Length: 167
Image (cartoon, rainbow, N blue to C red; front, side, top):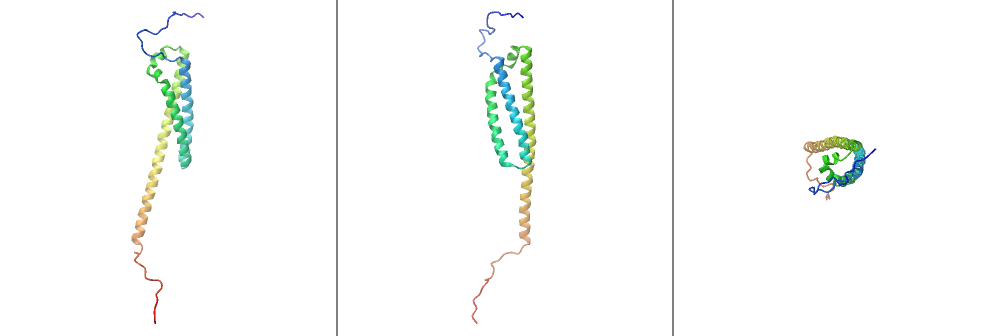
């Protein structure tokens, strides 16, 4: 196998943009994102179970864990944002195998995000339904209390229980 080398960098003197990171660096960032999204997906699944079983204390702990993962994902997003801004240029510099690897990682991340978003939507609906049921129950208790009060005897000041009488 022979390689052709022009001996000069391909960047133009006119270009003032910073050089794009090399494929291995971007691949590591995408791998990191995919791993974090898989972790988030596992927490998302567990979240639904906790909601169904009304385990609010554990749910709050899980939401804290999710927040930590989202912070780490944001850090990786920030690191890859220069590449994302020049995505087509980045892809053009890759060989077919590298483009395939990147495409597979991006597809995996996209599928994970879509799955998490759908589960979160379903969880939100279940929590809203539970909230509405509790509100209806509370309103029913209030109506019952008022109805019972309307039919009950009106309390007036009771008479004395003991009286001193002189004969």
